[in-house]
Amino acid sequence: MDIFRIIAEEKIKEAIRNGEFDDLPGAGKPLPPDDMDGVPEELRVSYRLLKNAGVIPEEMQLRKEMTTLGDLISACASGSEREKLQRELSIKKLRYQSIMSERGWQSTGAFAEYEDKLQQKLAEKE
Image (cartoon, rainbow, N blue to C red; front, side, top):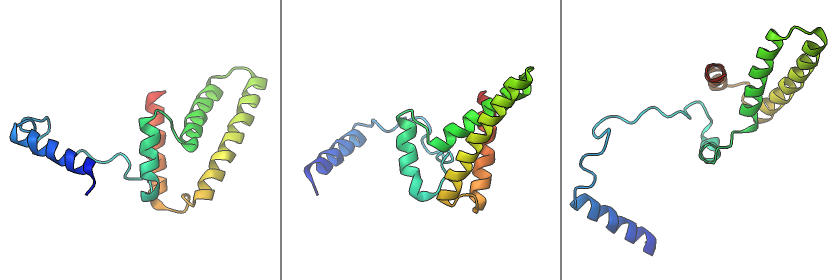
């Protein structure tokens, strides 16, 4: 064992002896469901790091922008402006589809479920 692990374990044992963990909120209750259930196992750690840093993956940013563009298009009164927004939306959709096919996510059932949940969450925040 390295020295840091030994020190950490001793601090934890000391905290347990002092009763510092006795009245923690949620003690004895099951953990909340993982919000990364739909994300492939090999990407979860990197997604958590990005999330904690306040950065979102490119595909999530694209989904957010596509939702915003869709709302703008539906509210747009000008035909030329609507066409411009539609072209921009098409470019973002193509990029999104490219990313998803590169990762092989479009063929998985988990991706479809995750994509639907993501779209609902983005629509709620907008």
